[in-house]
Image (cartoon, helix red, strand yellow):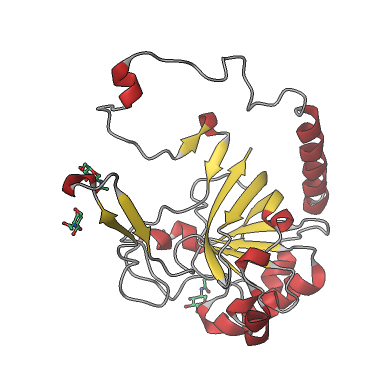
Length: 276
Ligand SMILES: *[C@@H]1O[C@H](CO)[C@@H](O)[C@H](O)[C@H]1NC(C)=O
Ligand SMILES: *[C@@H]1O[C@H](CO)[C@@H](O)[C@H](O)[C@H]1NC(C)=O
Ligand SMILES: *[C@@H]1O[C@H](CO)[C@@H](O)[C@H](O)[C@H]1NC(C)=O
């Protein structure tokens, strides 16, 4: 089989297994819906175990491809890291009823999505914000591909990937993942991304409507604005940036991405997961 036929076959297989497993939904088990506890300590819910950050959910069935918003993660075009984004405003320690924090974060920080208003003034004014993004594009079968490590994503590179028509969501893993750029404190502007001609090739020759990449911008710095303009002009392509694709096998997954419904925002932090 040539690679494109193989991918189509797996897409077919994917939809078949999705239908086949629908009857016994894994979210439902036979345990009681809600258990009653009469133990006072349990009711208070205080536990001495330290919290752990979960990287693998459901025995590896669910892969979190979102970066945690760490203060020491890189901030785009800055030598400074992202810094503190969660601020404790009220605290149990000083007599408040609860701990209460506020979030203050740039919309294009960490794993995030771009709306058309990001690079088009007329779209910004017309209200094409993150609240207008199509959840049907942000959720569904997606292909994770490795791109050649020695180039930015040009038309030639796009062509060489042989992504068949009908594939609507693609996550591009690049040298950025190998170089662990999202784990550095400082933003490295030599990251890999789309060149303008690569973006144009994708628009003209594929059915891709969701473009995901493993650094803070899908566009290489040399073509930062031109490549964004090509992608966002039609308003039907959604860009998801700074995905955490470390250690994930290439292939087809069920992608689920949910941005915040921030009215008037041209970008938003987004939680993305892959389900095997
Ligand atoms: C309450 O506690 C928080 C965090 O400990 C602190 O930042 C804040 O200034 C305190 N507020 C008052 C009124 O003491
Ligand atoms: C929440 O309140 C507890 C008890 O006052 C305090 O020890 C803890 O530091 C607070 N949480 C945070 C995130 O500051
Ligand atoms: C990709 O382009 C950037 C400039 O935007 C450059 O610094 C980098 O070396 C290029 N990477 C590769 C692998 O060609």
